[in-house]
Image (cartoon, rainbow, N blue to C red):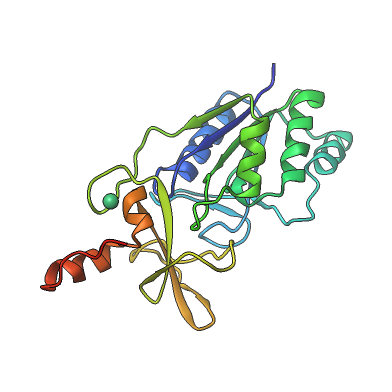
Length: 223
Ligand SMILES: [Zn+2]
């Protein structure tokens, strides 16, 4: 039986690495798949992992119809055994419905990878729909860590080094200082992301701010 599987975690938990590994494992068994992504850090139509792996992929625009795409490909004689869907949090709820239909009606496995919540701590629409529909939702075992050492459960966005909790939901930015591409710029602000534990996300205490606070004689602010 084909399955719809959602593997999730915060940033830095190796989702894209696992997406590429999953693709490799199935391809090595002679199965044929398709790789999809949306707003990958390497730019359009690539799945790239922080560990340096990279593969061509199909970019998921909001108007992509997975069902139509798959049926058309099969009709033209292509063989598809599975779909790998990275950055699935960015997909629309309708696209996730199409993926479930592909699993049920075409018996094609669909492996989705993505973040659950955005920088405002709200569920992404695509992630919410996946939790609702997936046969299994698995939280990745590689734990991302907050600067304090606790498990990082939340994604923070910073603009010019200051944490923000409002703004456009989808802004692909610099994920760390080692990223190859220049940081995204929104209204002339440098956008970056950082993973934090819930307490430090609530208090807006990023690593940089914690460092600055620890160097100042002022007591820690309780917000
Ligand atoms: Zn923390």
